[in-house]
Image (cartoon, rainbow, N blue to C red; front, top):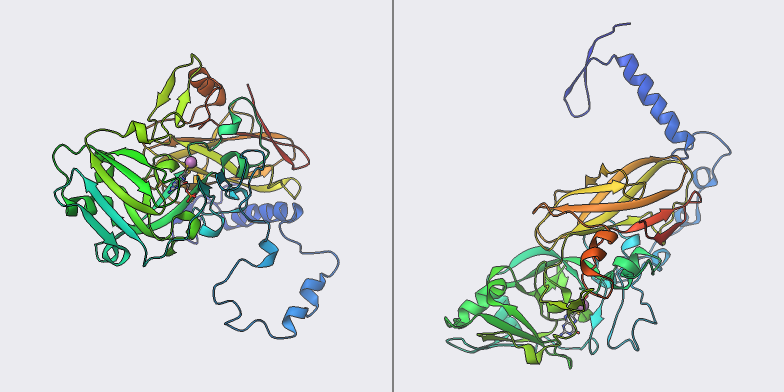
Length: 432
Ligand SMILES: Nc1nc2c(c(=O)[nH]1)N[C@H]1C(S)=C(S)[C@@H](COP(=O)(O)O)O[C@H]1N2
Ligand SMILES: [Mo]
């Protein structure tokens, strides 16, 4: 039966060739499917949460000043940073992990953004804060916190990934949760002064080719950075996500080195020295190298390559409902540019489908992706694969091992596999 009519849909575009009747039938059928899967409950026993007046509607709530600076409601108390006790000898020189399995969107709240300290998080006031620029400059300078606030500032969002993120997974699937396998990452909106502005204020001499940056903590975390990067997009940041940096993230001022290893993002930044070569003797250069299969080492692998992970479902975020509509979601990022596309596989990488990006990929920042699936209740080998603006495709674990071996700690950006069972529980596994 031919029944061609024109219809104007919600967004105002014309729908041609579907009869109103046909449209309604499809809509109802879909609605029925959703209700059957538990997305909507139209029938059954009366629900007291709907039919009865609840206790919270029978009295007053908290007044406005109950918590001058609010914390998450106690129901969310398990959404916290966690550490893995056997990883490090103590909590001073240690690391914890962002609960990425429980977050959505792209911005990491500072309160649950992972921490990495070499000698603990120090307390440094704005009044005691000083930043020195010296070395191969026309005029060595010292800035106070108030001085920094008087330079033109910018606000930009970037991810910080520790080079050791996923580092425990080289030899085999080890830690059971996205928080632990991929949680050495956070993504914040930073406000600060371009490092370039401060270096230009001091006047870099023509021989200046490198900077040495160090923090005010006991470890100082000194690092050499090519002047080119320093003049490109580095920020001397004093705000994150709109508010002051938290103590653990470098209050009052930290260096932001977009797209590069987290260890170069010096916290409690106190000094920038300009030189004509890198300061190898001052650094822990032996530590931040990647040992290859043949025993040789890669060093100065500063940029974080494209990577992604499904955050839910995942071992700490199992499917709690039966078959039917299922939101699969995760994060993707690249230190070389923006995320152009993310693919999702349900069968361990045999077939791929394109995921939906929550927003167009931003340069060197986290991108959220969604894959709206109708789950048939059978087990899945869930994977995600990031493709960045340079055309680089995130490698499989097998591909990465062929090139890098299994002796590395740093720069493991391989495709992650979650085995989702019929029960909805998920496990960290490898596929060959
Ligand atoms: N001064 C100082 N800066 C530092 C460190 C440190 O111990 N001291 N740790 C580095 C490392 S290895 C990482 S991964 C990041 C972690 O930043 P976060 O604690 O804000 O997550 O800070 C870097 N900057
Ligand atoms: Mo790190």
